[in-house]
Image (cartoon, rainbow over all chains, first blue to last red; front, side):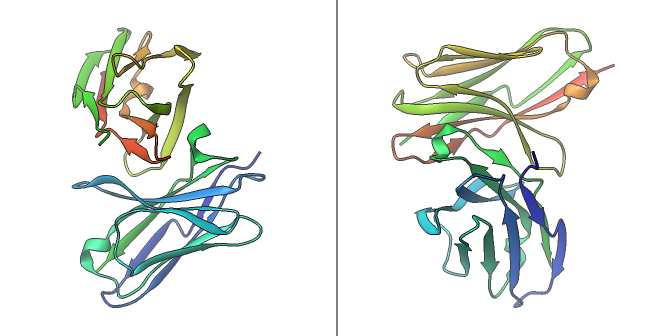
Length: 113
Length: 111
């Protein structure tokens, strides 16, 4: 059974650019959540999608957005990149309600220069 | 507001020792608690999920316990190995379906 797949694994972008990250959940999983992890702030919740609807949203500016497709794959977009957006972005999937446990992908390491 | 605390922040022990990592939470109204490990620069690997109605879960050399009334969970690692070196994170789902994370315990197993 394939795990959660995040692409790309590494990205280097310039300030002001935008970036799109992709997450393919485990087959059959309908809930996808996104997290940002930095050394200073730890793991911070970005948003959760379930059946193409955003169900929960963390405390991030509107530059961070996401969507989920009918096949449960999800994308996260960050516009007008800032140096502080450099982080490991993690995606997690869950079969139904996320409270029943997450499976995480390996993450996308974004570096903004 | 739910807060999750992990003690100690770092731990270094010789190979072969049994050890306990601690996780405490302030609000006992949780759905589930999950333990993860994270290797440097990598994603999170789920170790054990304890549902709110359960007291413990076991997987191999790992045993996690949950005491909701006291707001505590422990992760017991038996016969530690150098490959167990990682950061261990505890997270709880609160009554708002939000996942609240501890800051983690960095574990080093010395050969």
